[in-house]
Every structure is written in structure tokens, then in C-alpha cells.
Image 1 (cartoon, helix red, strand yellow):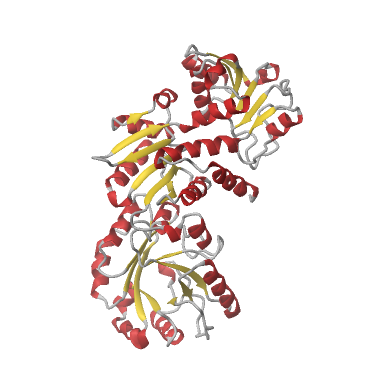
Image 2 (cartoon, rainbow, N blue to C red):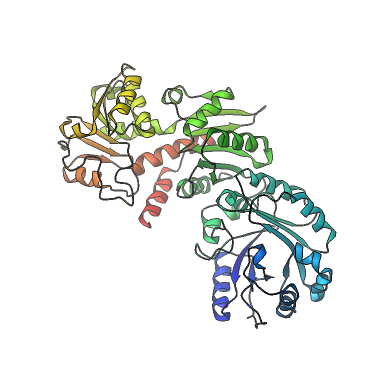
Length: 512
């Protein structure tokens, strides 16, 4: 059993009592009481959960300035007959072999070591040294340099000499905390709330249980994730995990911070795919790695959807291991764009050939829209602040069944298109007063469709203006849910619970 442990700094006994109750109500299995700031013994209240007592010195990430002897005396005095475990650093153990005396009265020792500068060069030496000591649990924690460090932490958990805690700190190390249960760790730490973490990258118990499906995780759980940089803003984990829960799929979806650049992307893919115990089964790809994903799949000779090849970007990878490793690359963004428009107009994709469409922005989303719409024969006008970029995009896809031309953004006010599709970030939170149409928008009527791919806020200034003119509108939430639903179905071969996914997105946006 992997325990869920909430660390609490001990400064005020009454606050400790309240926080301990909150931790128990949130589903914690045990507590870590951090007494770093104390210099004299304090009477601890009776607590309903077992706990670890820790007095961490400053050189290992704590706040205690006491000498080794004074720290050990404090731990001894405050743990007598109460603490289930006492956390003692390996360095302290080596300096004071008599620390084993603290095990009297049934108290057990967690022997720990922490490295904040990166992966410790003596990692395996630490394991050897720990094995020489009389301790019940081994704890090894270091600051992750990249997401690949997590795989080494998982390896430490697979064949431990004793019950083991192996965690990577920082945003790169987030998955070591979420997946600790899958790999049979002694425990993982989760903060009481988003402001009370005691180590870099620690997430809240609420997120761990309610977003990352902690109670459902087992050794066989398949792992999915979103590769991005940055990644913590992504709502995809909440959406996909809620969908897994709704259909009973044994999976967990996690954020994967992969540094920019093709070599970083390739290094993670090679390492993660080779580490079979991870059970990596599907990936969402977003900025800045969509082009890197396509390049990687091409190099691996993977099956790639033709339109994804044409667009030049992959946002979804399916991973199968039936008779060997098989990778399949998709782009679900283009289908989400097409189907959002055709459903709104109650037409099929082929009927897009009768429409004139303004695509605002020549970046990645704009390129996806132009490629998809041109494929189905639409007439497209690309508007972009840098007209040369719009011209390059138009030249690439003009004549691919549809006609594509480029115009400078200041000519948008003269447009006579039937559909306006914003593929820029203009109007995105927190710049909610901005609109890609500027101060002199084109004529919009009840026959016009206005589609904003921005989903935060749910109703942008662009959509507010369109609604005031009676136009048909499509929000970025619609596209976001559709592309996520297509990913879900590609990975699980089950129908996506789109209403649940939409409700999760709208709920999280409403709370921001």
C-alpha cells in the first residue's frame, strides 16, 4: 500500500490540530510533522492519523539551524510514545551512529537524503550506505534536471532493498509524485492546499485524488499525458482523467514537461517508450512540440495520418505494443475545426467548398485550419500581421482543392467572408478586452459564423461582438472538447463522454 502523506509545519498547535483534521477529511493516510522551526520541545495534540516527525536541517532543504545533537534531542523528546516514524538524514546517521537509539518504544526510522542541485552523482552509493544502516524505510529525493529523471526514481521503486520513497522535485518531477502508487512506493507527499507545499513541485491532496485518480491507480494502470513546455496550465489532465473515470478506463493522464527542442523531445520519447513498466499508451502534443512529434514519428517510420503530414504537425500519438511497439500519429485539431463549423451550419465537410472563410493568424492553429479547409475546397483568406507569413501559408495550400489568398490584417475590416475563424491568441486571458477584429470590424450578420479558438475566457470580446450582431458563434471550448474527445477515442476505442469533458472545461474556466 502506498500511503498518501500530507506534510505540516508545526508552529501553532491549534492550527496543527485543525490542519490535521482537514488532511484526514481530504483522504490522507498519514502526516509528516515538520518541527524545523522549533528549538524547544512542544506538546503535540492527539492526532487521528499516524505521523512522521521530521526536523530538517537547512543544508537538506529544511529550516532548522540546530546542531545535530540538539535536533536529535528535540526529535527524541517530541516523539516519545507518539510518532510512528522519525525521519533522519543519511548524513546525520553517519555522524551519529547512536541515532538507532531513537527506535526505542516502537518508533521506526526513515533514513533520507536530498539533493537540490540535480541528480546526485553518488545516487547508487547512497543506496549502498542506506542499506548499512538500521532503518525501516529508505527515502531518496532529488531535483529533476529533466523529465527523464523520473524513470530512474521508478527503477529504484521496482526492486527496493527496503520500503522506499523515491521522488523527483520540481515541475520536471511531478510524475514521480503522481505515479508513486503505480510503482509501489512507501508513500508520496501531497500538500494540504496549493499554498502549503514543503518541497518544489509538490501538488495538493485534492488534485492528486480528484484530478489524478489516486484511489484508482494500480500497477497495471496505463499512462497517458500531455507533452508541452510550459505544461502546468494545461486543463487536459482534468478533462481526460474525468473521462477515464466516467467509462472505467484503467488509465491516468499526467502533465509531462519536456524542454523545448527536438533533442529533448526525442530523448524523452526514446526513454519512456523503452521503459515498459511505465505502460505509456498515448500522448497529447502541444506547443512547442507538434512539429517535433511529426519529425520523430517520421524517423521511426510510424504510421502518420496524411492530413497531419500535410499540416506538418502531430498533436496525438497512439502507442500500441501488440507484437512489438507500434506508433501512430494524428492531428485531431483539424477535425475539431471542421466539425465545429459543419455542425453549426448543419452541412457536411464537402459543402464547405461553397464558403468564403477568413482565417485570422498564420501560426500553428491557422496553418491547421487552412490545410483542412483547403482540403475540402473552401475559399480562404489568410489575414496576418506579418503579411509575408500569410503569403507563404497561402502559397503552400492554394490550389489544394480550395483557393487560398493572403491579405494584411488591416484589410480585415473590408472582408466579406461568411465565416471568421480566429486562430490567434488575441483576446485570451488576461487580455480579455482585445479582439482580433480591432476597432473597425467587418460586417457581421445573422448569417455569419464567428469562431474563436481561444477558450479562456469562454466568451471572448470577439464572440461578444458577434453575439450582439446575432451571428452564429463557436467558442474555443467547443474545439478543445472535440479534439480531446477524438484523442480519447483513439486511445481507448470507447465513445468519449463529451458532456462530462465539456462540463469539466467549463467548470474550471468559470473558477478562474
